[in-house]
Image (cartoon, rainbow, N blue to C red; front, side, top):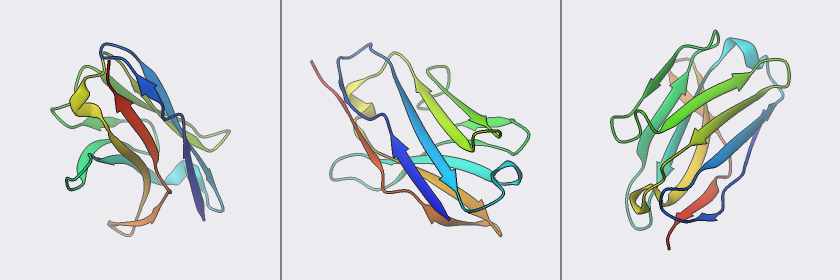
Length: 115
């Protein structure tokens, strides 16, 4: 199993980014996938999840600004981030949920929101 995030960058407040998570080594379409983030010097924060059939859930802090999606043909999940704020600065991780636990994580991709 491998999860590889990409797309992190430096962006100005109000800007947009799309993060990608390429998955391999498992039957991607049946697993719920999650995004979490870790701001500098802080603990992990939950961001969003997407079920195998595309239902989604968002943390209050990103509701209305972020959209999670998935491509079950190309085995990838995406986090579309809009109206970014400095508080969104963090390392973003893609996780697989297996057996009611986060059993695999990616290496993370860094997002910096700053003018």
